[in-house]
Length: 306
Ligand SMILES: NC(=O)c1ccc[n+]([C@@H]2O[C@H](COP(=O)([O-])OP(=O)(O)OC[C@H]3O[C@@H](n4cnc5c(N)ncnc54)[C@H](OP(=O)(O)O)[C@@H]3O)[C@@H](O)[C@H]2O)c1
Image: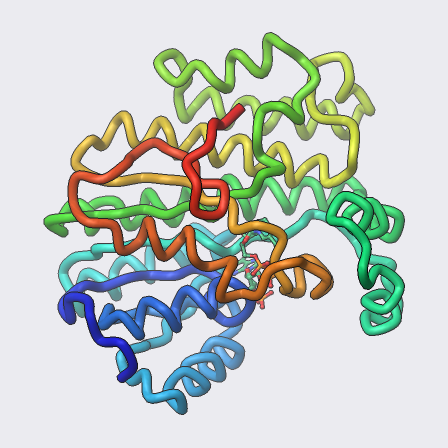
């Protein structure tokens, strides 16, 4: 095993571990001696990822099925972790979807088209090739916000059984409150002392209703720059993360924006390699006890949620 510097007895669960940033996080955690439960919604994709890591000499990676949008799947995973390890040290909530339909034809042609462009221009070009129908918006909230919440809830007791439980929520710069139009809504989502998980669920419902009724503007939801449901899902995830940090002071709960990374989600036109994109998450996942909680990392730098 390469770089075996960590504590062999630590156990991590990574969601969406079969590709992209999630796979890299699994690889790096395992390289640091952590026993990794790589999870994926599709058995064959997960098993293949484990076998790829195995061929790199990382035998401390196991697979378990997890569809984060299916609460019963999260409960089955929690039973497995309880039975096998009796605790969980690190949960990396990485799995997410963009909530869009891509009309990018040939990915290689697209890559050539945007080659050499600045980041903002590239994202603008991606936006020209995507659509955001209601059904995708709903799936996006169900996966990125409700799904992550269900997985976290199912695994919380096991994180408390660790002497140093950590939750790393892979968020996005798109979840920052600056993308919201309404001051009142921004303030509400930033007021962690008043906010509750139940209110976040209500806001998720309100957003979907406003989306369906084309009323996004009136309540102050994000409206510019596309990826609307994705922005809301990550903002709700950030707020949930901050509430959790407050309610569970013995855990370290943080959000990380990985940067614009070369993965399928970015149509492989990101500026960063997966190794670079995984750095912030690794920093938080491997942070010693007593470190930051309730915070946000923009790549590897602490940044505001606003
Ligand atoms: N790439 C970027 O530039 C970028 C920027 C900001 C934030 N992020 C965040 O970084 C994280 C990883 O993104 P990525 O770029 O690596 O994306 P990706 O390559 O599209 O990978 C997404 C992963 O999530 C999994 N997933 C999706 N829905 C799932 C579900 N219901 N249950 C279980 N797994 C599910 C996918 O599994 P399948 O293979 O089965 O689809 C895949 O493993 C996400 O949270 C994303 O929002 C990425």
